Image 1 (cartoon, rainbow, N blue to C red):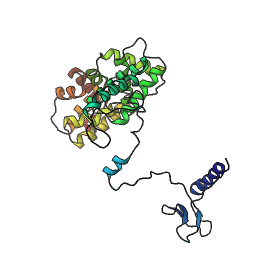
Image 2 (cartoon, rainbow, N blue to C red):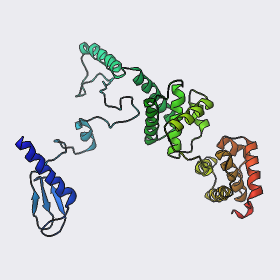
Image 3 (cartoon, one colour):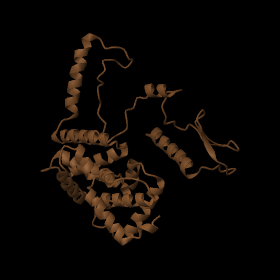
Image 4 (tube, rainbow, N blue to C red):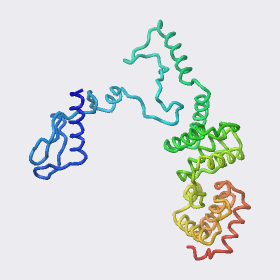
Length: 319
């Protein structure tokens, strides 16, 4: 007990020196950690502030990335995209041992049985089976939309919160998973529409919308409404228009928001109408049909929104 208490006391003193006092008490210069001697030493006068510093790093050395990968004994970081957060052990499907040698034929049957039992043990109850199916569905939809890892983790966290609060009962797993993905897109302000998620999901758009509004209320997710400007960069890129056209469209949308022309209207339709007006001012040829197809609205919507902008804004001065 005396050894443990003295070790804890010395460790706390060292941590205090590192955190609270990074300068030398004699000359006032910075102190550094000497890895070869395990001591905290002043870089100017050489005063040793502490000795026998504990190295928390690995005991092995690596001289390139391949050696580091082979010698590392820890697993991947925790992730919400796996039902057990990646904490359980997985038996690789390759019939090779740790040294890369082939497993003898006598042991392959035993390894096969171990894999089977391991897969059964990892999913032990109904909640884990629910998470396994839902998270795989989330990963499939996110892969189709080419979404980044942080957004996938956010959507998985939203779905896990819904499971913990028992919000899945009476609703389809696919619908709540798609709604969680849409909520994550809204959180990160990714210009993905509900229609695009419904196209790759295995449920219809109405079911996703109902599930989205339900989890939004029960989980207290404070998400701002989507603005037409959120889709502008994406639509301009898909339509292959110039930067000048984009700048004019930004001015049109800013003026429309000031006058309240965007409230109560679909953001994609208003964005498409602003792009159409900007293309006319920039003298770039693009049809209403092409804009309507890109913004996923009808041509009638584009014409109606364009007429509203033309009546309330001085579009000839937007340029």
